[in-house]
Image 1: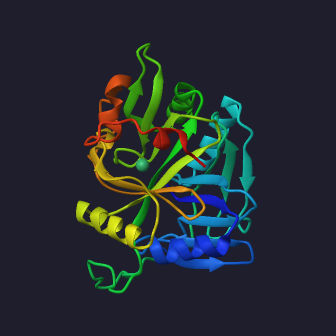
Image 2 (image 1 turned 45 degrees about the vertical axis):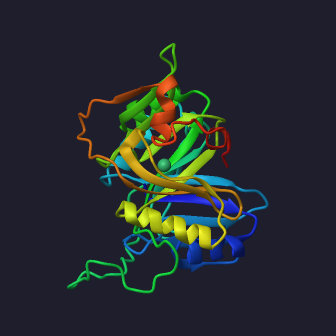
Image 3 (image 1 turned 180 degrees about the vertical axis):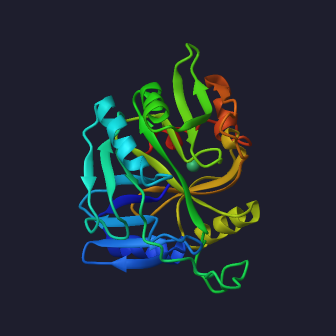
Length: 298
Ligand SMILES: [Fe+2]
């Protein structure tokens, strides 16, 4: 996952939250847009905030593995029936050519190869193994994954699997065997993107990585101290096995910090959850399917 681009009706408030509470670095800014990255990220940015009168997601962007992938995926997308728009160097800050298209569940997705390497905070010569002291807020090392909604989860899954080459690690099935949620990866993590039943076009959350459970606990202290509304946790997922805390940014976009999980090989046999056991899959300790968690999205 390269970056997530969202809109905010209060760019100043959102910028204050993402820098001082979440602890990202503001790396570029103009009149209506701000770009942020985590302390251990090499690329130009992982979060873009754009001023708009309404909250929403402009797009989410994945980096492809090789330069030729862009042309290959462009023709596969066109064969599937997507209208693909090619973005040229200079059209988007911090990156070269990319392709943009609307996925079957209505969100705009981008694939990009060339990202401007601006480096992490440690450097490449005799680097310290830990971040420099004094970083504000939670200060996650990197962006990890996002969760989007789809009215037809099975259709979205087929698209991500057959057209884009994502691999499924876990799924939730209803009593009739229909997919209610799928967790997909391209990076040997339990998920790079997850798709759960909900309105087309919606963003459920995006998540930043933390290095261990103790950091999730510290994140909860920082969030509570700053009066941030916590949605769920700190707790553990059954799905992905990860440790997590969910919370809302000042304008209502759900954020997560996440750690743990397993390392699936490309031939990892997918895990299946039944709908009646999904409470444990979602939040293992609480064993409850929270309606706010399922029904609230951006
Ligand atoms: Fe998540």
